[in-house]
Length: 348
Image (cartoon, rainbow, N blue to C red; front, side):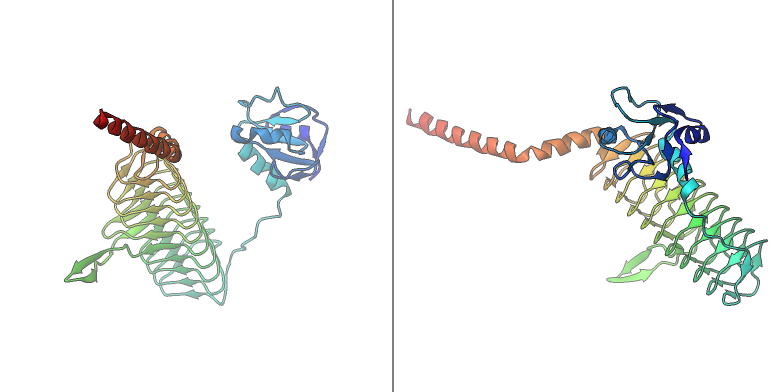
């Protein structure tokens, strides 16, 4: 890629501040960028890097105060991160192509229905009476269970397991190692022995969902575990039986959600957060990293800590905890003074 800053600004619908004639030949992170590279700044927390970077151009949004930054060239856009992704596509290698066709080395059982232009790779297994939509790609060593339905234009990477009687919408991406429809963790303890409770429900994944690598989504005990449309799930997430997740929710890596929990739309669960069973997290809530939710969370509420409480209060507690050594020292000194005063009082 060799384009001027002006060319890129026109491509993005942005505005140039600085020399728009410089040639851009590469893309890079703001720390690593050199001459000829374009980088981006999406978080003002890292604004100090603008004085250090050698990037020839930086994507920023209109809210950023660039007047005090000298000798830099900017392209002002609505969303620097998304705009940077568009530029990356100009230099990225072409995506892996999955041409329509069914490998002779896959296994397709009786009663399977296949749409148009599907791609089924070697060693994939499509079990009895499954249904695969048009344009869907089933990569190597992936298993599709009996009576499972997968919509159009889905992409299932190698070693995905989708068990029996699961329903997946269209344009769903499932990354390697994910398991959809594993048994819910249900046992009844009788005289000290854990007896398995049958998990006869299913999982319903709606359109435009993306499921990361090694995610596990348990089938419901009865009814459905639901992942609503547009939701994005990072790697190594556990979603238990009968969980219901709303639209366009973000679930980051190593999050665990216990059974029968309801999560609203546009919720963010940050990395390593945990949610106990049978609680409700309302729309637009934010659960901070490593937070432990054991109560209902209101609409738009941001919580952190364990047990999860208001983020502002949690921050004050964390700051106070950092002062504990000094506080303990002061208490110890006060105790010594009190003892000294008591001895004096007794003598008098």
